[in-house]
Amino acid sequence: MERTFREQLFFLLLCLSVLKGDCRYIENNDISKDELHSLFTSDLKREIPDLLMYRRPLRCLDMVAMEGQFTFTAETPQLSCAVFFMAEPNEVISVEYDSVDIDCSGGDIITVFDGWVMKGEKFPSSQDHPLPLYERYVDYCDSVGSVRKSVRSSQNVAMVFFRVHSAGSSFTLTVSKHINPFPCNVISQSPEGSYTIVIPQQHRNCSFSIIYPVAIDISEFSLGHHNNFPKRSLPGCAESGDYVQLLGGSGIDTSKLLPITDLCISFTGPTHMKIGCDNTVVRMVSSGRFVSRVSFSYRLLDSQELQTIKLNNVEDFCFNN
Image (cartoon, rainbow, N blue to C red; front, side, top):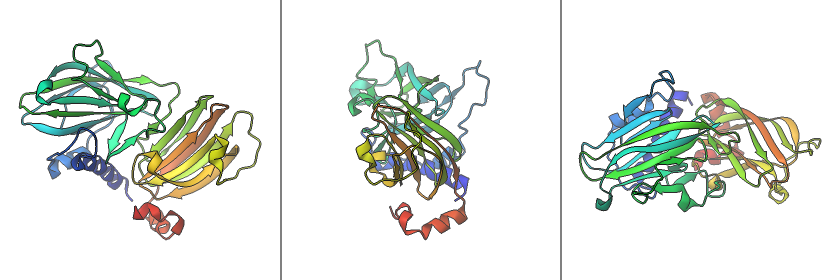
């Protein structure tokens, strides 16, 4: 599967999430094919020096991966819009309201969500996010008159839902990024790279999501001082309280993905697997008793490798779900 096709499929998933109306605030969206294709070629990287503030208008359905100031102005009523924000794995995102001209009493909304919603599924899942679900939605109209003008995400992705009923309604957001010393839940911007998840004696779950079919090599998994045991995979890893899961499927909610394998004994790799799913996730579950660490690298599968995997009954669910 070529990289350009994967990028198109990725944005198509985003568009389908809006068009199907599976998230809390989005019901309908009229998006033309030209508008959809314009997302495929959006540049997600910085193009200007940090000393200058980047500014551009927002589309009803948009993707933003740079800092700057972004303004939406409605030419017609827009009843189901969403903007997806993405940062580097070691960053979190701050969204600040600079100016807002909407009619809250008339049913207009602007809502920041701490994470992403796609086709009714949420990343991070409720099991993995530190906040209860209701606290992850921050409605501008609910906070009018309060001192809160900005919202900061817990991970490297966030999004804004909005709905306006009148032409001329507008708002401006300033997006900035901040270093996260202990990244937990991450969606990868790239189909290839390497990463290490570290959980410093905290009772939490962390996921690294790769929205591509990939070959993945786990080079190390360690639990504090328990680092001299042989490598093995056990069906009862969940009972240990500290383990790593490899998950696969077509959605983004890790609680709904299918388990490929569990690792719950420390080892120094490599463990190599090819996973032909739309989404591949490395998920670490920590009891908080140890400093947990897992290191891995990944790369995009080519079309020939994908055809071979389709013949493998163990991973066939990636193509049938």
